[in-house]
Image 1 (cartoon, rainbow, N blue to C red):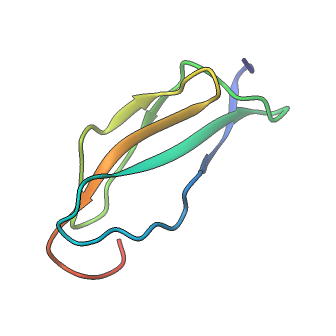
Image 2 (cartoon, rainbow, N blue to C red; image 1 turned 90 degrees about the vertical axis):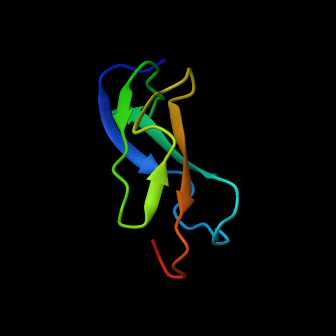
Length: 79
């Protein structure tokens, strides 16, 4: 795995979620300055209004990915 975390990017930047549906994963990837995945990095997720997260932190895996499940409220819109 890579060295010091240098960047974090959303993997699934846009996603359609049906109101009241099952939780949808929010996925990010952490890379070092050379573009290699960084394992073992604690990532904190901050939900917007109307979004509930199963947990607010996740640790990156060997490929630099971290995810949490999110659900949206009853209000239709963009979150």
